[in-house]
Amino acid sequence: MTSLPQVAPRIAKLTALSIGVALLATACGGSSTPSSTGSSSAAAAGIACPAPSATSAATSAATQSGAVPPSATTTSTPLKIGSLLPTTGSLAFLGPPEIAGVNLGIKEVNDAGGVLGKPVQVIHRDSGDTKTDIATQSTTALLGQGVSAIIGAASSGVSKTVINQITGAGVVQFSPANTSPDFTTWDDKGLYWRTAPSDVLQGKVLGNYMATCGAQTLGMIVLNDAYGTGLAKNVQSAFEAAGGKVVAQELFNEGDSQFSSQVDKVLAAKPDAIALISFDQAKSIVPLMTGKGVKPTQIFMVDGNMSDYSKDFQPGTLKGAQGTIPGTFANDAFKKQLLAIDPALKDFSYAGESYDAVNLIALAAEEAKSTKGVDIAAHLKDVSEGGEKCNSFPTCVTLLRNGKDIDYDGQSGPVTFSDAGDPTEAYIGIYQYQDDNTYKPVKAEFGKL
Image (cartoon, rainbow, N blue to C red):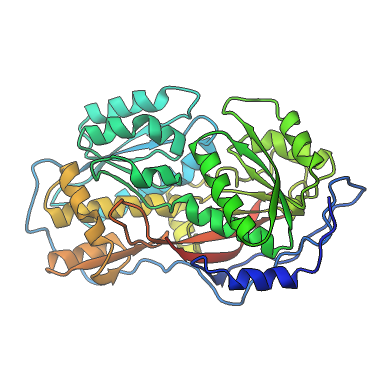
């Protein structure tokens, strides 16, 4: 790979860009960039990411004081929430933290007396991935059981296969992890919402971060679906706006098992950095790249493949590789609560977004005094903005029942919805892999959309 010039002029150029993204925080995690040994035709001299600042961006813990007053309005139809989250397929590693987040939210809502005087019911179903028809079957089953809202899917591609089915039935679809920009303009009858920000923001953060690390040229290996191509477009736009150049972009399809051609073509362009935008295909692609001399410090990953690879790769395989995940860092108190729900958890990605989805649906139902999907949707924006700040169901519902307007901020960060059901502001976490191929948080960036 080409040698890099001094990083300072590039950072100055980035500082001059007006992208709506401000560095706010850092958590535990090193700022060093470990090197690999041995010769490499893909060696990138000069990749050196900026050291994080000294402030912290941990999410606040939920607070509660006093007893929750009973609801003045009761319902004869309890709120029933379905989940459509992956327990099989290429995003199955995201299922456990998302499901734990849903279950923790349900537990806290019911511990506080439920919604409109009745316990909330939850039904979990597998979403699978786009290679199967599991999501359609699961959605049909959930709708048949009378759910008012469905939390999921995680995959944007999967959501596209069921969004019309869900919203057409007058049911809220609330994804904790969809990031495709396509949903912003989808004709969803006002029933599609998400706590994960559009990849317009993740793309800006990742593209600019790679440039601040000194990369002038970028290669990309991209999953050819709504998630992959949408994110790649925004990464490229930000990287090129920062003065960089994308010298290679190779696509692959869901279900592919051979990636040598894509890897070879990208490495032939000798990029300084490589963005790997995939799901669990990273288990096959990463060894191909490192086997051909790519240093892990050149590899930048995304939420679809940021996972625990301690059982998949030899120690040190990913040491120094970095990646982005929308949302703030899960704080210790929240992790402890999640582990009480699922002691086997190792990843916490999108747990906060899933937890927040439950709280927002429950609070909107309380404010609407109804458990109908269309009524809940009509109040989701209102409970996310403009009122008294609160960050848990007990504290927020207490305010509502005392006649107050509320502004819910949750474990995923400040939640303020646009008319399209998108977060208008969010954090993007940047993480770095350690010698054991697990990752730790490095810094968080906050942006508005």
